[in-house]
Image (cartoon, rainbow, N blue to C red):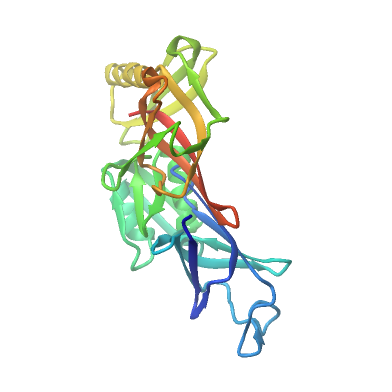
Length: 316
């Protein structure tokens, strides 16, 4: 049986007697969150670690979580302490590097900006980032934090932003730069598939909406697919109506497939992150084999072992 191991570093303090760790990440959410449960009786040189103004752990302390089996531990979360819930057990609420984007509001006007221009202006010094070439055009920021700017770019321009391994990626929901590929088999390393459903492409309905954003911030829209289908909205830049139709038709072909949708529960190895690829295989029904993008992952470490709830997206 594999032995579990975890090291939690908060500021200058290291904890090994951890009750539980959970980490949630998704390309659809800028902020990756970790909750850590620790015995309330833990003390340091006779001082209480958590309680009151004399507590040694402070909001904004750097947090590093390492966990895994036996000697195969790895860093599974890096971020900052956001809050301490002093119940039983004590819960440390942590946020990834997006914690650094919640302060220092900005007031600035851009007349014809690119995504790179905006990121260079709003991000704190020392934040490593990668971005796609996206024309933003005119943009007005009035006492707006970097986190609010990125949220606005997602809602208004379809620009996804998230941290992975300490780097901010901005532009696309999935990047090949960091993708790793993993294999999961129903007869070997999938614990539960109760939330994983197999579907036929003729049974699913989608309505795809493509919006073109012009340099002057005017917009043009094209819809394709089923009027009563699940709406998926995508963005293009400086595209004419012919290009929008081409993009929408191509996206429909991707979304409508014979294969799985939903999520499945797996062990802690191989470790999966949002944006990775998973090959799902079935020795009894090989016709169901497929390769999928990972939308989100909930990683849990505790008395019951390590588990990953992996939500898949479209076929890759």
